[in-house]
Length: 116
Length: 114
Image 1 (cartoon, rainbow over the protein chains, first blue to last red):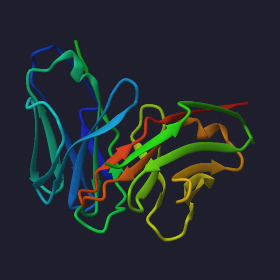
Image 2 (spheres, rainbow over the protein chains, first blue to last red):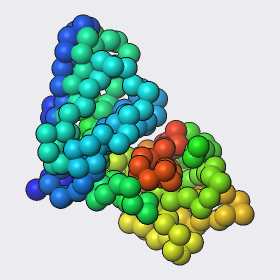
Image 3 (cartoon, chains in turn red, blue):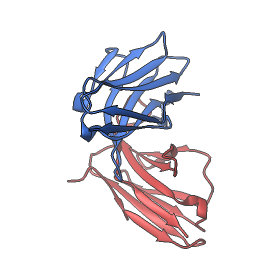
Image 4 (cartoon, each protein chain N blue to C red):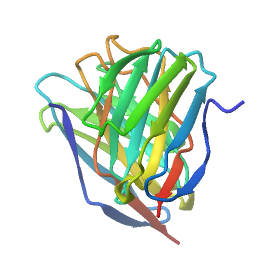
């Protein structure tokens, strides 16, 4: 009955590889997000989708491509992985975006990516 | 652009002592403000949020925060620290552009000493 789940939990890979992280929420929310937490614990938004439509696309390398097959899923594909991509990636969801604001975001457990 | 500043990257208190974690925001309009907690190797969990209703907000686990517009602050407090409160705490502001993205502070690591 996990609200926001991510797979895999850990991902260790070589530079240059392509990898995907999957996220699913069973809260019935309209909006999903990807955040990156670096080694100093700093969290930054990467992308957000509202009802499968991209609404936030921060300054992220083109090697990162989100995909939302339906509003309950938001996957993150990363091409040509680099050392600097090593981080914890968090998925989150909220009831709706483009609203009056203040919606609570519910976070997944994170995916710890290590690029060697 | 919205931003938050958390004063003190590390705070250490004794069990039973007052917890005070500081957060100041930068916003030209009344913002929406959040405190999240992250336990080791886990995701973030909402402690409380301010959405322009009451200025004193009560959250889970005995935490509360007071929105002070004159000081542009939203400090988090708990009267008596418990060992289980040891975690990383993040203050965040919600973007008012309607996108709901959260802009986080750099976090404060709370250590509770027995």
